[in-house]
Length: 541
Image 1 (cartoon, rainbow, N blue to C red):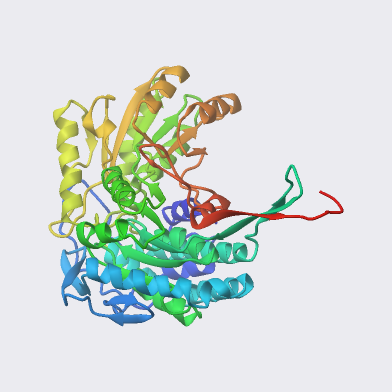
Image 2: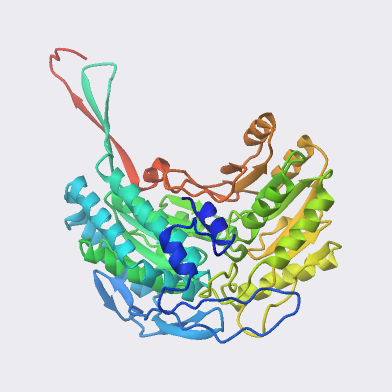
C-alpha cells in the first residue's frame, strides 16, 4: 500500500475492521506506551493535554565516524527539541569542519582500501537486505524517535514511512548485483567496454521533514553502487539517522562506509559541500540553500551535485470532478505531514463552476482535522518542526489576510505551547499574493479560481518551481493534455503523494535537477568509463 493510501485510511473511520492487523492494533491502543483517545480540533484554542511519554530511549547522540560513536572535535553539543513542547529531548554532538574532514578521511580510506567496493555485488546486496530486516525488527523504536524528534504522527511513521524505508533498501539491494557495463561496437579493430563504476565518496545532506525517507533515498542507491558516504543530518532531526546507521553496521556494513555528522548548515554542511575530497554531493532542502550548496561544490573541486529543492505545486480540480473526493484529495495533498512537504499541493486551482461549493467543503474538512499530540491515536496533525518554521507560517497567514485573501478557517496557534497551528484555508487567492508564490511549508491551503484549461496551464507554469502537480478529472483527454503541458517532474492523476521505490522523483526549473528513487537514481552515484583495446587480426568486429 502506498503512503498516500495508508494515511488516507488512517484518517477515515477509526473502528474499521478492514485495516491491516498492525494498524488495527495501533488504533485500539494495544501498542505499549502509546495512548488511546484524542483531542479533536475545534475553533476555540484549548490547551493541549500533558504530552505522552514516547515509548523509546535515545541511545545515540554522538557522531558516527569510521564505525565508532565519538564526540565532536570541539566537544560542543546542541539541543534537539520536542516540537510538542519546545523542551530538550537530548544534546547531540555538534560537528563542524574538523569533524567533516575526519569523516571524509574515513570514507576515503574505506573506499580506496576497504572491502566494500571490492566485495561481490551479491554480498553488498545481502547486507542491504539484512539491514531492511533490521529496520522492520526495530520499527516501533525508529518510528517513535522519528515522531518525537519531528512532530509527525506516530501512525504515519510506523505504518507508512518506516515500512517504506525498508522497502526502499530492499529495492536497492535488488539493484546491487544488476549494475553492469556494456560492450559497444567500434568503427575499426577495437574492443570497447563501457564500465559503470562507483563514483567514490558521496556527501549527502538530508532535510528535517522526512528524515529517514530522505536517508533511504540517498543512502540506498549510493551503497548499492559501492560508494562510501558522509551524511549530514538536519540539526532539527538528528536522532533517527544515528540509530539506523548503527543497524547498518549490525547488518555487516564495513567501518567507514557510512559516516554520520550532526551539525549546522553554515558549518558542517558548508564544509561537506566544499570539501576537496568529496566526489559527489546530494542535497535536499530549500532552493535558496541549494544555490549556495551548488556554488560551494563548483568553487571547490567541481563535484557533481544532485538537488531536490522547493516547490509550489498546483493541484488542479476540473469541473467534472467528484467534489467530495476532490476536496479530500486536495486536503491530503496540502496538509499531509503538517504541510511540511516540498511537493505539497499548495496552489489548489478549482474550476469556477464548482469553486464556491469546493471552498465550503474544504472549510468543513479543515475544521474536522484532528490536531494534537502525534502519539495519540486518531491525531492527523502534529506540531510544526520548530519555532522558526512556526513563526514563518504565521507570517504567511498575516500576509494572506493583508493582501486581501479571505481567511476561511484557522490562521492561528492551536493550544498554548509547542508549535501547533490550526489547519488554515484561504479563498479568493490571487497569483500575485505571497501565499500563492512562495513556499509556505505549513498547513495553509490557498484556493484559486480558474476558467478554462489554457488559463490553468499558463498560471500553473508561471511559478519558478516545477517539482510536482496533481490533476483531478474524469476526462482522459484533459488528463493527457495537462500531463504534457505542465512543466514539473511528477504529475499525479486522481491521486497524490505516491512514492513507490521505483518511481523517480525530482524537479524542473528551480526545484532542482537529478532524480531520486528508481533506476535513474543509480546514475547519480556511478561514473562512466570507456575502455578501448586494440584488436590484432580479429575474427569479427
